[in-house]
Length: 212
Image (tube, helix red, strand yellow):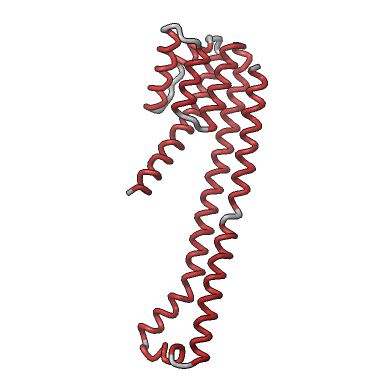
């Protein structure tokens, strides 16, 4: 049940980030049409219920006199994903600099979408690698169980002779070693994801420097 909840939350976060990326493009279009950033934020179509609710909270907070940057900071706090962090920083830049920042929003949207596709591909490759590891590791034990089920005498030579027991011990040892090796191979995708996250962090830093 916990795994299902975690999976549903992950899917919800992915859907939110995808909608936020499209929303950035809609805001950029409004900016290119000459709208101030707050009006562009208010009139762009979010396409996601939770995103629309968060956008409305930012607009209301700004309408009540809260600094626009502080309202966006609350957005980042509520949804601390890389996409929302970079996007809200870009919106703060747009508020400070006007329509000239529209191309930056569009570029960020494209970059975030491309990297989301890369992350999805990494997750898919990791899932396939894990499945292959499970199948390869379980195959010898599966053969042993099936053979014993079809013919009870199948295990006699294995369990009742010294050579058979030695082979069984060695086989189980090699099986454990193979499982460990498969685990190391599967985890090889983690450094790729880490490098990807570091690249995104550098982009965030670059956006922050531009804001200052």
